[in-house]
Length: 404
Ligand code: NAP
Ligand code: MG
Image (cartoon, rainbow, N blue to C red):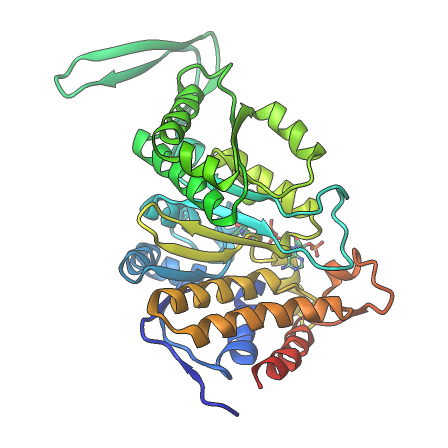
């Protein structure tokens, strides 16, 4: 075999939980380390280690990402009540993705991986729709409380001179709930720039939508900032590239998306992006066929899969039962991160390896070899369902041929 590809800068590696943690190791062993002299700075974001470090490891991994510029992340558990006894937790640690996004202040781009034999549930979606999710603020950085027995809730802002601006939220007659949200003009402008840059990169239109008719200050501010950034910095570049920026109301956008053929970037506020990316990825076939990359305004990249830790499959795996878990999105997280490292460090062989890894993965599925989730959807006649590990080995057969 040829010499392994060398890396010059470490890639930040964030390990995770459950079934995806199992796949993580297998992907490295079967598909990466035979070809690449893997140079990573390893952070264990598995829930046990987050508990042991009081979540410090999550912060450290985000700081390392700022330092080196590229990270690859495995899916991680966001603890809920059921996880407290399961992992003996002293605290319900926050979502690692939320923590990392808040530190990197970026935009998440999610694009489905299209393969022959799998027709989207919306058959007119012949091209991918990339969801660009704002990764800062709103409900993911909220303050909320339950209030009991009635009373007055107010919104109070105290400026630097100590002057207060007050607005009544509600006079409660009985029990209720309150939520405080915020966002930052700079973050919204960074989000807009990330989306417009990505549009220029892919030569695709950029759509954006909010509920500005109802939220006349909050959502309207998003709309205004996008328009200001577009007019000042991108209008001419978009005209030259033959692409468009299109703004509409979120409910109108949803209707238009359903009627469209795809092939554009749909910029979404944080919550809309969370929900719509699951809808879009499911409609394209499987959650496991959706890539995800967080891009910060200063050009830092964090690659991951869009799905979770696939808990149900993990419990089967623990019982010694066979699983057929789809590793495609996690493989593409690795290939995306390695390709970006190759671009930044000028290592063409690493970029070529990443291309071949993706090609071998798609080729495997198009040859009819696939995991259970895709088997249910594929219209190929010669299709065959394989287990989690056999799928990786089948990919490697094709990858080895491409690497010759
Ligand atoms: P999930 O892990 O995405 O899985 C939900 C279901 O979708 C699975 O039970 C499976 O369906 C199917 N599925 C998802 N990924 C698959 C794959 N790669 N291959 C085959 N089928 C796949 O979501 P969850 O079960 O709701 O969440 C589990 C844990 O993941 C939670 O603790 C949550 O906090 C965490 N999570 C993490 C992230 C992240 O780190 N980015 C994102 C979301 C959730 P079947 O069971 O029908 O086969
Ligand atoms: Mg989600």
